[in-house]
Amino acid sequence: MNHFVEPRLTPGAWLRSRLEAYVLVLTVVALHVPFLALPLLRDVGGATSGALGYTYVLCVILGWYALILTVVVSLVFLLSFTIRRVALVASGVLLALALYYLMIDSVVFDVYKFHVDAFWFNYLLTDFEGLGVPPSVIATALVALLGAGLLEVGLFYLARRLQRRGRIAAGFAATVIVAFGVGQAIHIIAYYKSDGRIVGVTPRLPYYSPITSHKQGARYAGLLPSGHGSDAFSTAQEPAGELRYPLRPVPCIVPPGKRPPNIVLLLLESWRYDTMDSLTSPHVDALARRSSLFLHHFSSGNSTPSGVFGLFYGIHPTYWSAVKASSEQIDNPLFIDMLQANHYGLGIFADSHFGRHKIKDTVFRGIPVEEKFAGGSADAKDADLNRHMLAFIDAQHAQRRPFFAFAFYKSTHYSYSYPADRAVFQPAKDLNIALAGRASEARAYFNDYRNSVHYVDDLIGDVVAHLDSLGLMDETIIIVTSDHGEEFDDNHARYWGHGSNFTQFQTKVPMVMYMPGRAPRRVNETTTHVDVPTTLIEEICGATDVRDFSNGYDLFRPLPKERPIVMTSYVNHAFMLGDDVFVVFPMYVQRYKVYDVKARAAPPSSELMRIAMEEVTRFNGQPVAGERRAATVTGTH
Figure 1 (cartoon, helix red, strand yellow):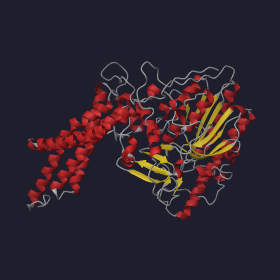
Figure 2 (spheres, helix red, strand yellow; figure 1 turned 90 degrees about the vertical axis):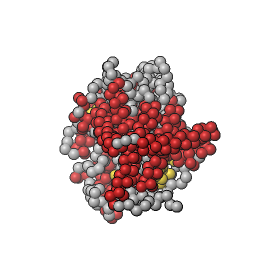
Figure 3 (cartoon, rainbow, N blue to C red; figure 1 turned 135 degrees about the vertical axis):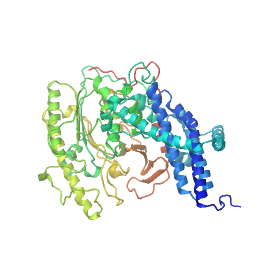
Figure 4 (cartoon, one colour; figure 1 turned 120 degrees about the vertical axis):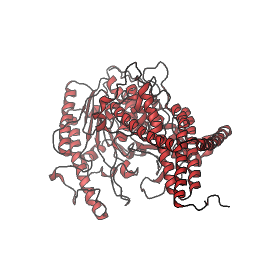
């Protein structure tokens, strides 16, 4: 007998039976809420406190996790509406697996401080023995799975015995929708205000991606009580993100009589690796002939926040959420602390929404960022930015003070800006991404982009010439690179711009590092943005154990032949293992070659996966008791 074949019913009875089954399942989802809350509250731990904090957590449990389960079972009923028993069984299995996942993830997070996602499931399946999981743990996991299944049966049994299930289901559906709205509204304002008791919850919860809106956060900021005080709305007792960065205080003492080098960091927005050449960027190319040129260098992501984060923190951008949640405790990256401890003058010049991206709060906290420049176009503003930066350099030089100058040029960002008389590469055509498609026009679009690079290259040439005229080349480190690359449908897969994949066209960038006293060289090993602050801290401070504060390597020491590269985007992250890219989505892992998004990646290296696992969890954990925040530096000169 086929138990999934149901007897014939009148249309009214048939529809009524389906609705009754759907109401039953919604009631079961409602009964899940306490069991969802147990592992999720364990994950949250001490990340929040007070009435507002726990109200928000309750809204997240109801308005995110319970809402997702409600949507999932609703889709199950839509897809299998004609077979009631299939819908009931499928819903029960999915609910049991969801609860089981939260249980397992909570245990893993408690021990290792990372959440189980599709990539780590892949790790489990491809290298089970390499994980070293003892049989007792496997047995416990199987018992937990059995327990989740039995609980599901019990909840269905209980739901069938409840009266007025229709009212329960309707009330529950309304509650989760309201909870979603309230919870996300709280987060939008708290994210804008960098309120740790709210944003600190995010990295602690699996598959949680709350809404942010800089505009709405600013508009309604006054509605959220201050996070400071001793009342019910007081802040959490421990750092929200459980981030321990660095692992130990890092002394940075410049010997008396030794002047720290100046540092000039020049960033071209969206600058891809193959436009650093003698034709497109002749001034940078000339500087590269006097410098270390890294030929296989990758940004820490395909978006501005990801690229800037790795370039200043020296740790993988998968820590970005934890850093934002702990911004008050961390204050600034160790590299910035080092500069301030040694009395550097700091000149930050960038018109790039650093406030909206939270870069101001996490990288330049308490440091003026010059963002307003004269001009009606990006190229005019970049020219004015250059004038401001050169004036800053002159002022610091007059005081004989070491300085750090950071410039972020925007002309190379879509839609590519340059003066009309600087269109040296032809044919050039403005790119309309919505209408782009013909391969024959890709060269014209690319030439338009190259013209913008060529224009900014002239500005960089002015900076180098100015430093040379002041006699500062012997005491100034110059770094020229980008936040990420830019794609022009290189793989004929309709990818344009950046932020959409992790191929070399969107993530591989030029890297020129001029270091006084170092011989010019061309480096073929794979390097990444997290190596840059690592190198500078070791160069200036003489720090030796870089693992205490970085995921990177000193670029002037031996580099590994193979290493995992960790990159992030706005919504997901990826591991590059050799030439293979593994992009982690909530429910699956996308695999392709770094040089071709249409080419299938090889199976991942177990050793590189092990290294990646260690690196993305290295800085998870509470600071040692009694320490001032770990990013301690001292300096004299």
